[in-house]
Amino acid sequence: MSKTNAFIFGDSPFSGISSDFYIASLKKVIPVRYRTFLEAKATVTADFKKAESIKLMNEAGEKIHQSIKAGKALAEVGKENNLAVTKLGPFDPVGGAIPGLANKANAEDVRTQALGLDVGAISELITSSTDSSDLASEEAAFVVKLTGKNAVSKDKFDAEFAGYLKSARSAAGSQSYTAWLEGQISELYKYSLKTRVEGEGEIDVKSDDGDGGFYKQGTTVKLVAKPAANFDFKEWSGEVTGGTGNATNSVTVLRNSNVTATFVKKDAK
Image 1 (cartoon, rainbow, N blue to C red):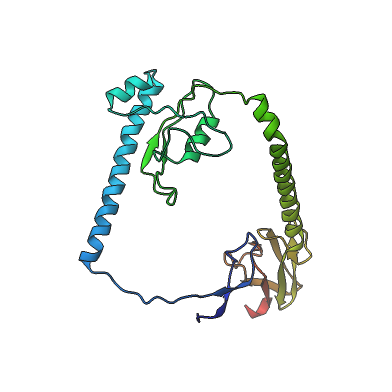
Image 2 (cartoon, rainbow, N blue to C red):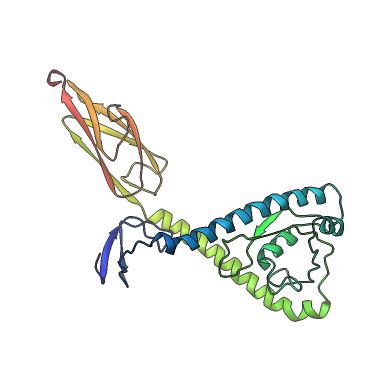
């Protein structure tokens, strides 16, 4: 691949729609360099220690979670395990900072758990990240107990409802349009499956998407090879990869492709 542009064959990584090809641009080429043991040792050691710490944290957290589920008070469990019980909130259910949380865990992880609870209920043990730039690094764990839900004041409701309604309508409209567009794309963006015959015979084609030769991606097409008089079916080739000697077969349409049924005279086997 050059430093300019190149054709890449396969599914496009930039959209939910598959493509026969797309164009990629390479911005920089970095030569490979194998690090020495001493260079790699510190990184490997740190990663191993972190992984082991997270493992131990999860094991300890699960024991604490079971104690809470068994009916022990949060304060009692915290004292037994030398852990601080943090009182959070009140906080907005749709975003913003959570008072008291600081960087103890990811705010959206906590918010998601709290919103799914009834008052007095306790969440499962949840692993989370304390680094907003690295959400996959789950070095924190927490259990949420919802102590109350506060109704929004009338003044706040009156001040924010119009904006909320506008946003909700916009989101609903966008979702509806996206669903409609995906349906249109599914109907219009189809792949060809061409059938060919060598010798004398025909191919019977059936699918849930008809038999017109163009199909939605993922459609399974049933193929039945029917030899003419004095001919026998020999084999499939092309997109058929399994059971090539079976007269009845099927293919899943993933790209523009073709299949060939070969028939031979009965005395030519």
